[in-house]
Length: 132
Image (cartoon, rainbow, N blue to C red):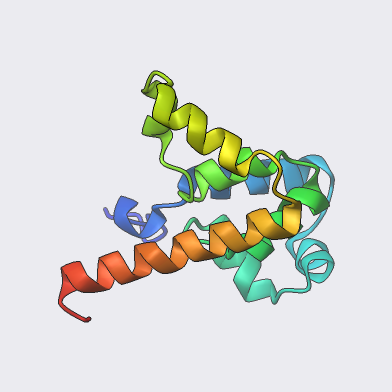
């Protein structure tokens, strides 16, 4: 007998994020409805988020971070905005220069950098798909 509620892993590509958000939301005794109201999102959006089906925007991820009191960098990693392999590489001189170049950015400037990174990745993905 097949479980009708089983979601194939491919459609749950954000399951780590989904599980953490749901676990913390429940730990704070918030219903999905209350949480969606706090985020300013629809109930359906929160259901899809907790189902691991969607990647929230950077802005929404920041809102989730603030609302649930979770570290933004952890959420960004789970939402696949950050490649976990960067943590396995040794820091070299080039990396040090890069870190210094962004060390003094404000939160608003950093948000712009993240938005631009998303744009660059979307262009790369479009050119791989032949859509560009």
